[in-house]
Image (cartoon, rainbow, N blue to C red; front, side, top):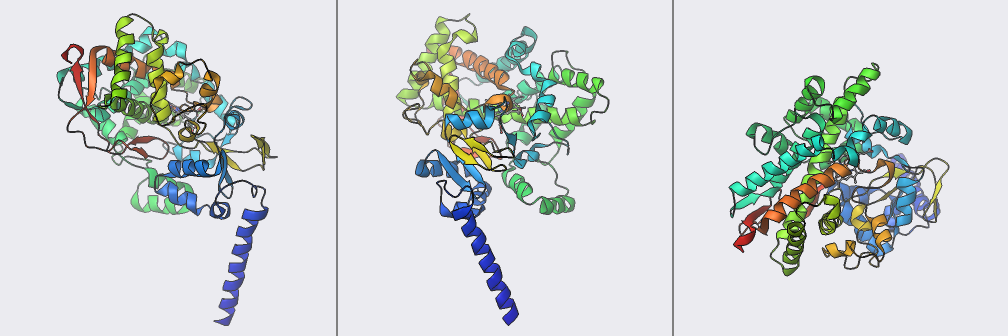
Amino acid sequence: MGISYVWAEVLGLLITSFMLYRSWFAPLARLPGPLICSMTRLPLMYHEFHGDRRLFIHSLHMQYGPVVRVAPNEVSYATREAVKEIYASGGSGYDKSSFYSLFQNFETGNMFSTLQKDEHAAVKKQFAERYSKIHVSKPEVSSVIQENVDAFMSRATERLGASVDIYDLLHCFSLDGITGHLFHPSGLHSQSDPKDHKFMEELSYSSGLRRAYFRHYFPTLWWVYSKVTGVTRRRGVSGLVDAYVLKTAREATVDPHTVLDKLRTADARNPQRPALLSASECMDHLAAGIDTTGDGLCFLMHHLSRPTPASRRVQEKLREELVQHPGKSLDDLPYLDAVVKEGLRVFSPIPMSFPRVVPSGGRVVDGVPLPGGTIVSCQPYTLHRFDTDVFPDPDEFVPERWLAAERAAERNQLFFAFAAGGRGCIGKHLALLEMKLLLRDVYSTYRTRVAPDMVASMEQDDQTISSRPKGRKCLVTFEKLNDF
Ligand code: HEM
């Protein structure tokens, strides 16, 4: 009894000394932040498991300023200088943290889950061209997207004046878009085919946040859990999407302009390439392409449909531009561009931190010297709100801010919805084309309003990396322009 008491005291003393060292003497000790966060990661983990890491980090920035120590070994930034250094120095910034290993598929890595930047660059080279602006604008590629826009417009027209769940329909639209880009003509048609609709349901209604953090922090326990329960997937339970991607990657006939065609060229050039590499890559693009574009459009269209003078005014200005310039290229529609950008600023589909690791030997990030191994990050949600000189009234939806010449460079440097540098979003041009083609056709034909029976919450509900409407339902009505 006496001996165990002494051991308990020694252990307590050691833990206390370690925590005091972390908060007062460790290299990060001078950085602002709550005392408890400098001693232990538990507060951050608590918010991660509760799905409000983004809001916790944001509240710390509002309290402590642009640089905050959010855990003993982790620092969050809210400045342009930090974005440049962390994500773009040397082209693609620092290596990713082990958090990204979660994004492997079929127990096989892919570009997004690759931690080291050199390895990442080699993977990216194999298919990056398929996502360039030039490629996605080619008629054979953009016509596939336009077919999906036409299918969306048909659904809206069939139900004119009635409630339409655009959460459902927009996720179908983006699923059909990304699978078309990867596999055409073997893509899905979930907007019109109930069999394909099941794929969207598996992807966009399931939740994997706690599972992902559990796996990240407790890999051994996760291993035991997955052996006992047989659960290995990141999300979804039926494995429908996994089976579709595996089969399609292996057997489907695809057009020469698709991403899979390019991956097959890489497979043919290098017979040593692991068999599941292309399937893992396609699965990642599919997952990256559905919720981001679907949620981004859903938040934006919901906002435009609200019964407020501000939203009505934006719809009217948008319609004016579209109706007055029917044949113009998307690049010549500045108000449409500003509406999309403002939507992605206020409702970023991936709003939370993108963690990176300071290289060995240490670096100075925005004037702060950091030792190698420190985890550093920025998050769009905060970058889009923190500097109110650049973004006045940051929670207000004001597309016009993107049209002003003053401070344009600073605004663009702080716009982080697609991240920045060589590891930023590869699907950006595809996503923007999908969003703009859809909004152009919808708002030059119809007016949208939040439906009278819409009661679901549109609060941003954070998932492992993306964020979606909490109620997973968004009812709006489409009305003919000359009907109001
Ligand atoms: C509005 C829509 C979209 C948004 C806001 C968005 C945002 C982002 C962001 C912020 C990242 C970097 C994340 C990080 O570093 O942790 C990213 C990466 C990525 N995105 Fe997107 N994305 C969108 C649409 C798409 C689409 C349609 C695709 C289709 C393939 C896609 C594929 C990817 C891939 C593959 C990466 C990893 C890039 C790499 O590792 O180099 N995204 N996206």
